[in-house]
Every structure is written in C-alpha cells, then in structure tokens.
Length: 213
Image (cartoon, rainbow, N blue to C red; front, side):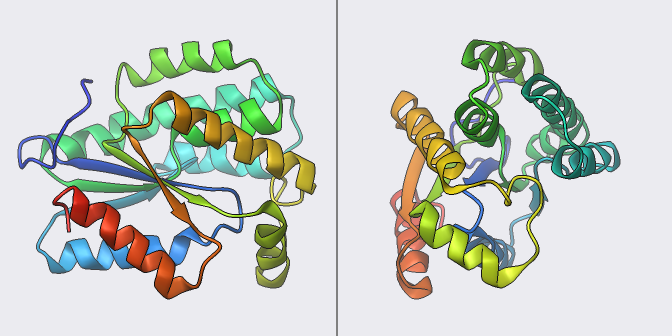
C-alpha cells in the first residue's frame, strides 16, 4: 500500500479531516463532498472508527463501552484494517476521491495524547495495519477546547469521549499538534474558531493551492 502523491486518475486522492470533538468539521466535509461530486469525481465519503459493517460494530464498542487504552487502541486499529481493505484501498485503486472523517492521526491524538498511551506501540500498530498508507492531505480543524466543549453541549448528548474534561481535550489537541510537527507536508491547519464562512474560505484556499479545487 504505497501512498499516492497526487490526485491522479490512476491512484485517486485520499483526504482525511481531523480535530477535537466540537471543532465543526461536519459542515465543511459536507461542502467538500458536494463540490467534488459537482466536479464529476467519484467520491467515497467515510469515517473512522467505521466505514464497514465490522468497523461500525467496533465503533459502537469503542464509543460506549469502558475499556483500557490498549484495548481501545487495538479495536480502533482492527476497525481501520477492515476499513482499508474493504473500502479505502479499492476506492483509491479505481481513482476515487476518498474523504474520511478521522484516520490514524485521531488515534495518536485521542489514545496517545488524551489517554497517554504508549506512542511507540501506536506507531507499531500503524505500520502493521497501514503498510505505508497515509492520506495525501490531512485537514486539522483547530479550535480552543473550551469553545469546542460549548458547541458540543448545545448540540447533542455526549459519547464516552465527548464527555471527557477540558484537560483531556487539551492533551488531544497537543497530540494533533505533535503529529502536524512530525509530518508538516501532509497537514494543513484550519482555524476553526472563526465564522463558518471564514473557515470555508480557508479550506478552499488549501485545495486551490494544491490544484484540487
């Protein structure tokens, strides 16, 4: 599984969207999907954990059942492996544009940063499961955890992760920042604390700069 380096017809395009809960990703993921489909692309929109019947079942366990960080990480990577084999790799092979709400960076941010789990173990699992596959671009919607928490409280009842305290989400945010620092060419930061229109303009500029808009 060698990562693609451009949005070519032969290899497709793989974009992941990241950020702490309450960062406001969904509105902009919807807009990206609509824009790509209007341009005539074969678009596969998916999410993690999830994206296949098996992965969705594992998602329910991860979000709603109490477990330690290692169990949590193993379940997430098991779901990811099925997702890659069943959905992501076949889509890229036929030239589709894959838009994924969260991927491995979320595991390093939530389990590694938030839970404080061993990053070396996560790196080993990443290597085993992904065999080199990474997104061509990862958008990180970055927002103050306090702002994100206020948005969440007004939106829905929290799951096991969303119910964590602000310190947890500050650690998650730091986890994302560490991943961005380690692979700066793959990431693009979006200031998600701004108004929706301003955030959308940032996303458009990022894709225009890469010739993908």
